[in-house]
Image (cartoon, rainbow, N blue to C red; front, side, top):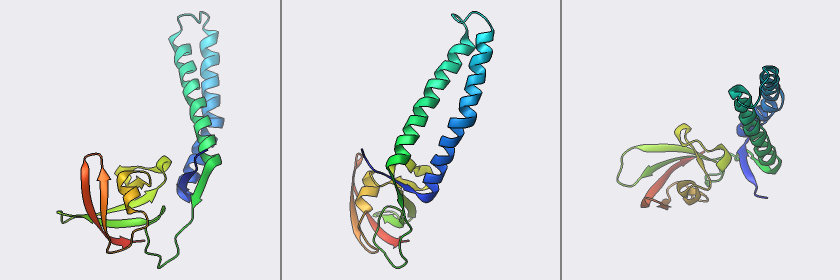
Length: 155
């Protein structure tokens, strides 16, 4: 099984989602199924079908979260003064040819959310930045082509 990297915050969020799905969401779906079955004819009951589909989705998500959390490695905070990029680092970079700094936190794939500034350690940029230090010029091999960034700050 593959190890998933999660921040402590990400692990907690996924644990809370799992707890919610196992308890309240399962109960809600069971109630919907029960109500739909009381309606009589199940063959053409759209509510029953919708509830069964949601039940299948929820059970799949529960299984996914259980596996993810069972194989997760929680990323500990980096020691102060360690300026080497690792999973859990927040990195400030500047792409060559631009004047704007970009800031990203390197996280595991399960927690990645580029719009929130969290990029996966498996993404082209995340993978390229790993093990580099402030001042390094880093080549990024992205699907859209190769580009270079400079590491400005690591925390």
